[in-house]
Figure (cartoon, rainbow, N blue to C red):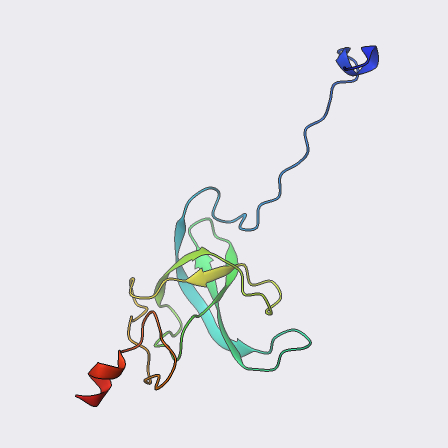
Length: 129
């Protein structure tokens, strides 16, 4: 049961502020943008690799850091890309990923995977033929 103070107009219950993991999207599933730069970075502490990232300028004149998924890419400055939500866990400040096969970002990876499966790479049967 609520107390007299809680019910009174003077001390209303305050709503908890919601946190958005992808604030740039503003309830849209995707956002279109243009690559400002394409570069590599190293991940956070226990991991060691070379992660491919891009800085993308979007419609609202803001620049976001996006992760480039898959093996190899054809991106360069001024490439038009589509970004979606989804953070790269070990790259600080990277809350978005690029969508393959849309605009200037090609679907096919630049080299074949021999063992692992891939969303974008060619199947093993295609490589042998």
